[in-house]
Length: 95
Image 1 (tube, helix red, strand yellow):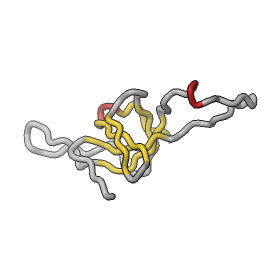
Image 2 (cartoon, rainbow, N blue to C red):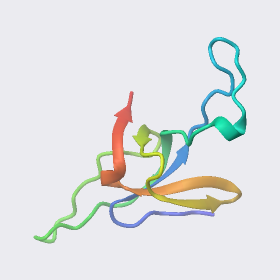
Image 3 (cartoon, rainbow, N blue to C red):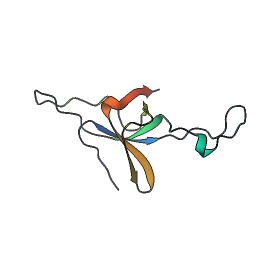
C-alpha cells in the first residue's frame, strides 16, 4: 500500500530498542517503553502559510528522528506499525 501524508504530516516507523542491556540483562516486553527513535518513511508537501506559500519540510524520507513517546496517531500499514506525526511533534533529527 502506498501512503502519502498530507500537509505537514510525517509517516514514521519506530525503531525497536535492544532487548538485552550492556550488562547482559534481558528486558521483557512488559517492562519496555515505546521507543522515541523513529525512521521517516514518507513526508507531506508542507503546510500552507497565511500568504499562500508552502513552508518546506525540514525532514526527508530515510532520516532518523526523535519523537515523543505518546505523540502522533498510530496506524498499521501492511501489518507493520507506523505513526503519523506533525512536523512540530518531531523533537530532533538524529545524525
